[in-house]
Image (cartoon, rainbow, N blue to C red):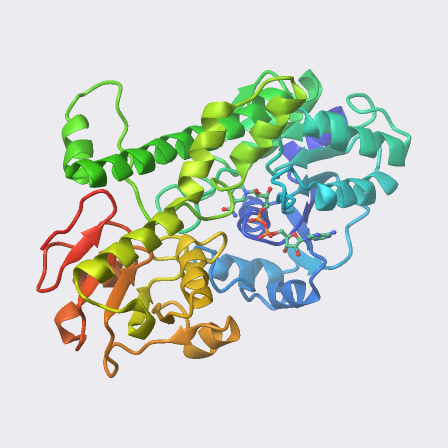
Length: 438
Ligand SMILES: NC(=O)c1ccc[n+]([C@@H]2O[C@H](COP(=O)([O-])OP(=O)(O)OC[C@H]3O[C@@H](n4cnc5c(N)ncnc54)[C@H](O)[C@@H]3O)[C@@H](O)[C@H]2O)c1
């Protein structure tokens, strides 16, 4: 342990980040900026080639520090390839941890990486799991594979840390180094090494007592969010039925200075974490012999929102004498949230595909995507400056959409505001849980 501790102190420890995605790229840059030599491994050669040339392979990940990447790659302080660095001292797992179609955790990739790392594991290395997993998986799955493949003993011959990534893509305030980092270790030595390492490039580290406590923290924070959003989505449906404006009620409730955090309803929840992570917790609960019924229902509530938005569309079409089968519908914003070019688990995309399946002429206007990019996804691009349409659906809250002049859309009959961002205007605006604003 002393050797690695010393190598961390004098920054001679070599770091290998596995997975050059939304998490791995900004993390690798931040580590290299702090003075460590970093190798980024990814199975996709086009990504590692772009990164080696100082280019961002993920055009939708705009907060990448491209100048630092260029400089560090140019100086050979950051290298990238499909291979891993056998000589590295610190190995970080940053690969995807998706779900199987039945919503159970799919750890195939994380297991593959653990096997790769285990095969050539040097004594005294530190392995860090940044990928989101359910409590117990870093120990029961990753540590086991590392031990089996290497013949070494976790905690004695190598060290193990879990520090689930918490970044929020597009957030320019809480950038990767400003987001406090929760760290759990397999044992005291692992934790000490983890804290010493992260303290070089993260402003605030939060040590916790075990791997499981760190993993469970990630589960709690994302499930808390999913749960609250699930409830407000359900509450919004009630507000629609009861003729109450949900935004007014949320804002009024928030005047209570204690015990209430604002959440707003919408067309649905997207991104790589909130629609998936709670299912990891639900699965872990089942293994522990219990059921997270409240969480399960919240997830169902969130997943129902694109369908609910479709119901609002059908209802509004009847009320406004628009025949949906003849109408031209345009979805404003296909990304999962505002001001990002990110389609992962995007609710407006779910709705778009639903409308297409029903044979409704559906177009997309999203300033973050070119016509060619939309066409490649079999989406029809819409050009507001020269085309007319009957219905607009606000799919995400890109800043442009609030200030957009909807009067210039000839033929527009009504708007479904899936993010409740628009004010009353010349045509009916139907929000989620706020009824008709006309
Ligand atoms: N994206 C986010 O906003 C976010 C936030 C917090 C936590 N997380 C979690 O972090 C983890 C990583 O997420 P992400 O969004 O960066 O995923 P991602 O899909 O963007 O990146 C994963 C990368 O790993 C690479 N990869 C896959 N198999 C590989 C292999 N065998 N060898 C080398 N590289 C391989 C892929 O090519 C890809 O580039 C997940 O567990 C996710 O849940 C993501």
